[in-house]
Picture 1: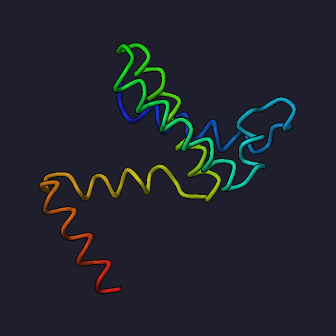
Picture 2: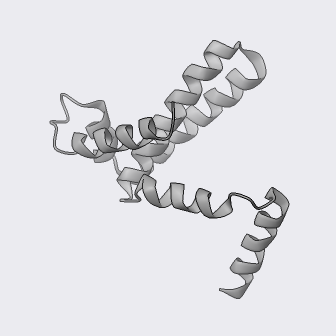
Length: 111
């Protein structure tokens, strides 16, 4: 497994924009705009947290998959490409988490 599955899923989600809303759950989410996509993403995040703290590994895997799907739908809703997000992660590779977080704080202050 690799990031290829995320890229493939992002492409499928983009293609679903052309489907009829009666046929595609993804299209229904996209038609709901950022508010609906954000609501579903938040619900899935909470379910993932619950699975992490109070359920077994299979439940966590399932909820994490749902969370990733809804994140990709939210990105598509705002026309943010998964490749751009992966690029941000790539730039952060090799940097300690504490250093990376500190650099974001400095960048925000400079804006």
